[in-house]
Image (cartoon, rainbow, N blue to C red; front, top):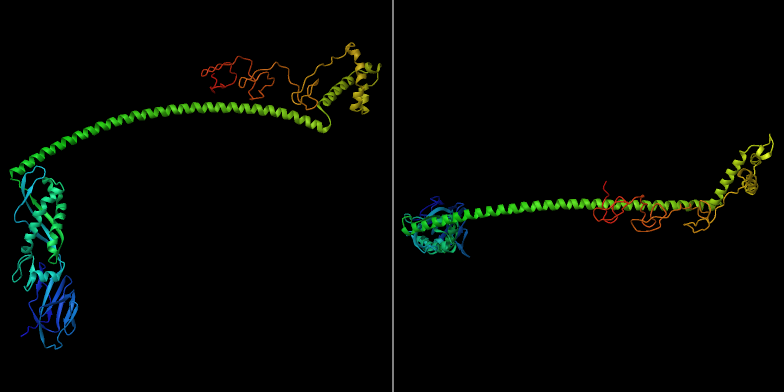
Length: 484
């Protein structure tokens, strides 16, 4: 007689990986509940249908999937059928312990001494392929867990212990040698050792539908009582002391080098500061020389400009006179005639008319408005009248004259050139320019370079280049400023 069951579910221990529900034959309409962390495989007449994921299902006349085919349940709800349900726990099983039953023989790569090491650890295990695990390990038993249980198949621990032991014993020594790990410093490299051993262990679990998310080597037991290991420890101590001495020597050497470098840098800094100071002094002297040179150039330019302005002023006055119809000579003659007329007017009446009460001849003529031309015409008569006052001597007449340096007019007897108005140059023997060497200069500035005429002294001697008879404030050769 078929057993009646309304709900099929599993809420047991998480250490179980696969559990078979005890009810095998049940009626249509039975409820199947699969929790979030589970999967369920439905068997009908020994054939496994597809997995049921998390959720609630009713086994009735709907079509159930069988791999890529369809399996139709009987439509008679009163009729029962042979069926089985397996629940697969998908939770990650944490901190599953593992270890090697025997110690691992190891040859120390540094000393060649044989040692025996004990290795143990923990791992996390999870079902990756439910159908593969069910078919290959569970079969028709009630299920499987990490440790053995009543009515279950052989435990996973018993099934995989030989594989774990073989993988660890075969690869532990290679990992230590390949990475040159000191046996006394092995605890510092447990992460590296764990990762390499996981790579060698995980393929055996994946073959049965399991996976290892994490694999840890937590203990490597060293043979402290082994005389060979004691010798390795002593050698390691000596090596460590040697390293300490070498490190101290390296530190002292580095300190000495640092001090030497510091002194070298200090001397270099001092030399750089002194070089910078000398460069600043040189630049200052160069600047002063350049300022003096520019000052001399400025004075030369000012002298040239002044000379040119005087010349242009003379030419401008001559052009104005020419535009008005007279020259500088006419102006001088007019001034002479005016002064002569004023002298005649200041004479007494007796000296002109020969009797008292008589008026001045010049005063009468000025009152009559006699023009400048009449005065010029009467100049000889006034000259004859003045002979009595000069004892019959005639005024000396200029002879020879001078040549205008501006327009070239020769035989000039007046103080200004009648053509261009240039003033008569003062007679001088001339001087020699100390800057450009031009000789016979009669002006106050050199017409070529504009240097001012030196004072009547022997000058000073430059203490730098030795130039003599310097009359300017700066040496014309090196620019040295005159002291004192």
